[in-house]
Image 1 (cartoon, rainbow, N blue to C red):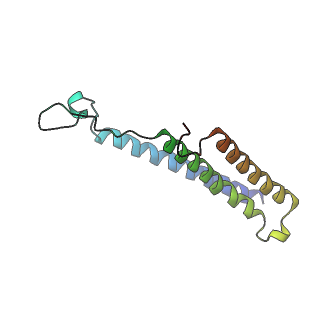
Image 2 (cartoon, rainbow, N blue to C red):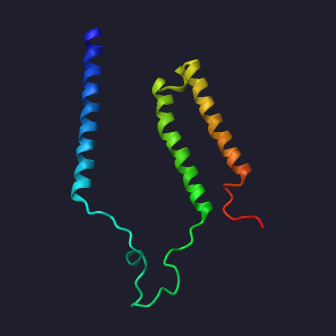
Image 3 (cartoon, one colour):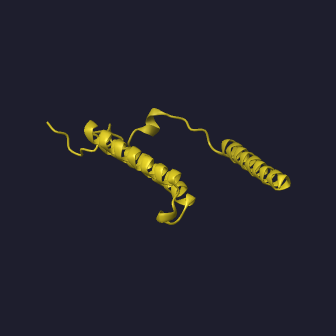
Length: 130
């Protein structure tokens, strides 16, 4: 039994080492081959037939949209990472252990409390009340 554990640990270590070496090689290759980025005023401005720009080329971005997208990502990542762990304990609801039921309920309560907090804070309101 101890031999199997050593094989698993050594294969995991070799995989991590391989990924680190490959990542380092790719980053160094990108730095050596890539061109240097120079921020010059003329390159960063919009071109309008040689005249000065009449208006900014950047559109205003709603902070509410950004916050809503960020909240979606946070809750989506929670669901993707934690739900499979809960359901991997047992597949049939009737045979769930007490611990897995408790973990599932705790997970749903945390998600619900986060939703209630965001609603009370007003982050989920798309249009501001004036």
